[in-house]
Image 1 (cartoon, one colour):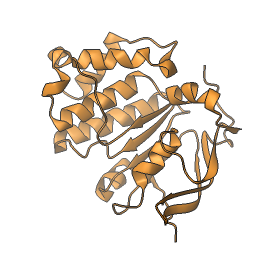
Image 2: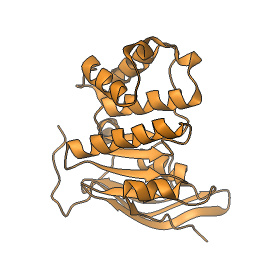
Image 3: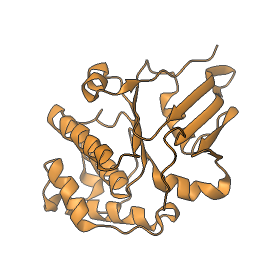
Length: 223
């Protein structure tokens, strides 16, 4: 079970992070802290390395400089499986397994980081109801889903695993306007369920970030 950190202690803390591609620094000397209850919004032009930053926060991409702490402790390789069970990443083009929607939702619980958690079909249907999808949607093949539907399944999969932190990379970019609003409400509901939850939302849509009333955060580019 994840303990609730002291109010003054950040969940995530990045020290002096730097990432470059070739000889060009995308960002350098980045200091970032995400506290319980935080809702942060990150926007900016393409090419700044926002997606790489999110991938680095879950250990999928290694920065050239700096280190990361979880609840005040350096993140070690042995701690990564548990860490990924409490820090959920939703990429803009999240991959799905071949099979039905239900299979994709259930298989996430076979991953090492999700040991000890169980798939809850009632919870899955409740989430589907919030985005206007019937139980029949669970039987759809992942191969026949639109880009927006695939993104929706990936989000439901992350939420069912009940993370403490969400890292969201343009989660509504492939959705129509109505579904995008439903997804915003879904994530806000997840956030409000427990006081120690937090998220970082990346979006090119500044109006969306204003609507969500998130706190702006800037990823400083390197020189």
